[in-house]
Length: 158
Image 1 (cartoon, rainbow, N blue to C red):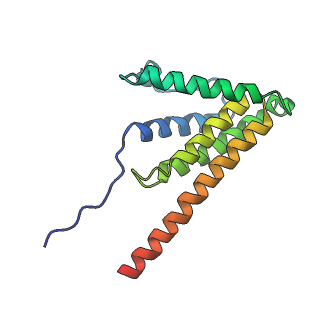
Image 2 (cartoon, rainbow, N blue to C red; image 1 turned 180 degrees about the vertical axis):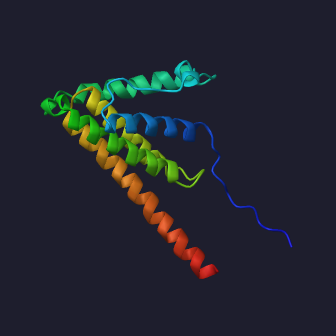
């Protein structure tokens, strides 16, 4: 009798980027002033035929956010503790994206939350950072809820 194949994580580029993001986030949590990456990752080029198109779209979205963003509660970003909290949030949201079932698209909201949170920190806009946390939290909650439903459905089948 043949054993059915189980879907396994692809270990593709998204997982590599998520692992790198979690590594950087942990360094923020412990308060490193200079981020460490393995030497072979330091000069890694993300290239491909759609790179220019992606960069154009990405920069257009960032410029749109810049129009509405302004320094709000920027004093929050001057503390070491804020960097640690930022690191914990980025780690948690990235872990949520990492644990999403492969090819489900459920990693999108937690990942988008990390991006918006990061832009909020870069632009020193606490409101934008909180919007990023909210987007990511909805994404992680969705991953957990659908995962819980899938486990319960599997228990009834078995």
